[in-house]
Image 1 (cartoon, rainbow, N blue to C red):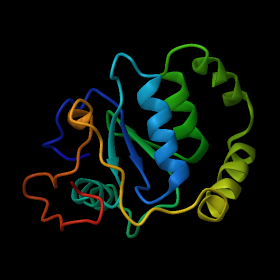
Image 2: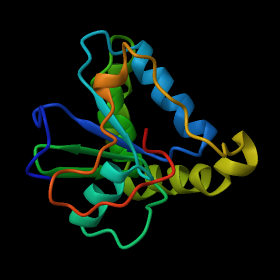
Image 3: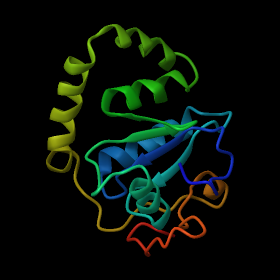
Length: 153
């Protein structure tokens, strides 16, 4: 996790900034997270690319990630971690932790594989309102050498 990460105690959601489904998921979380518990970064942003590189990813992952206190959750574990952090009734989905991870992840990968075909792809990333800007990390961390990304704002 980047050393310069502000508010490292808050979970960070790394999402595909070009995916309509992923952007819809971010909008969903924003509306159901009144305590502003989650922060966000597009995987294509300078911050997202630098973070992924630091975490050992060699390319852009085909999954949403949740990074929190040095732990990285991917695929269905990321989705369930997000649901657990939202207001009711979404934490009730925690019962799905009882489903074996390989089965949950099989469904997640199937949806991820078809997400552009089913939900479309954006050429430009969604830009948060002024009120929401503080919850989005887009600048490369100091000393990361992060390049400018398509979704950096």
